Length: 293
Length: 293
Image 1 (cartoon, each protein chain N blue to C red):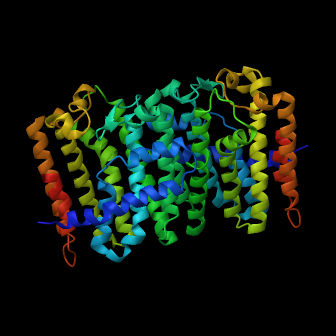
Image 2 (cartoon, each protein chain N blue to C red):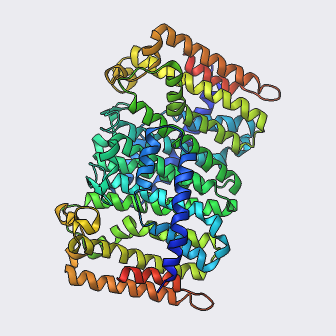
Image 3 (cartoon, each protein chain N blue to C red):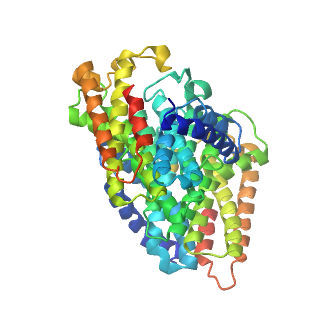
């Protein structure tokens, strides 16, 4: 059976990929730096965050999908920058990502830092240059900056680095992950809501959906690090434990973590239930189904 | 004699400093990351770039100075991020900046990378949250991103790293510096012009001014690295030669570099001459005088 998510993916991933490739070429003009940026952007990511944004637009204002595409692509630039910097020797020191050498392994540390800086900056340029109304573009810049910046994603990575080897309480771990992984997922949902001009009440329900979905996403990632093989992950398994990272299985045990995942997914589904009058939530529910597998 | 620049500095530097300090506190909420960000922002920079932006506003629309302040502060955040990342071990590997330990020496490499990422992201947040009209805010985001991004400043730093130990031609060196130092100076002037709604013709003259001023600034920096002492610079002197950097004195000799500086300053002054009908260019000329000393 073809799900709505499978359909969105089949339509939008090729559109996103060709937009990213073409637009990266047009907004860079040297040799090595654009190659480093493009290498990681085109390294076969699942495009989860842009798809999530587009799914919100598709749910509430499908005719806005074409104007939303550059903003969705900007989210992927921002996500890619965060992966490049997280992989650096001074951070997680990872050699492999999606089965390929990490950016600094391929281009050296200096160019990898700069490729990340370039992608982060370019994300805001693409948002500013999109065809959406000026007010919407400013809302998108603001939303992305708040969620990705020093109260959001960057703070999450900072806390993660500072807390390696220390044992966090569950609320501390939740705060860390809310920032590190949750913030950009929340940004994606909120940016979709801005483009689709979703009202305040529904935006509140979507925010809860995003929070619970982001939490579930991180718990699942932690569980997979314990249970999956290196081949399945495209990067070495069991890295979290080796790096003394704080994780859900580390804190709650594998069964406890699985229960927390189930709870978060139920929370996400319940939030979508609040949207249901006049809204077809099948597509957004498909994202939850996908994490349940 | 008090120059107009001295007057602007006396009024605006304390205003910028207190805005930066207060707003940094309000737009961060963890412990270490904000400390690392604030450390470098408040490390006693000259605030040249925000002052340049405010000087353009002061020249063409002085009543807009209060609304322009957050945007000027955002430029300083962006400049500070670039210094933190340029100083990293994988880049220029500098231990001292303005007489103080560099960010990574003080906070470690991971937090320094993240402090840079945080400041870059926050620059766009502050632009988006300023009180200027939405159209102007979008123009500022776009201008800053283009000049600071992978066709501008980040590309300049990338080329600088790639070309260490190679000898560039004069046009190649000019292109490198146009990006590495010139782009953010150009952004500052153009952002001032946007806020002050300067017309196209005058913006063209300001762009030439910015380009020549930026060039002069870099040549002067290269010359000082050769002629000044470590105490005068607040960082080790003669570092460019040690790092096999491409510089104007290296390519043209010290006298040739001094002539190039004189030429660039003359070009900047000539560009201001094109503005003169109905415009008091004393303040902008003061910036040129300052580099001539």
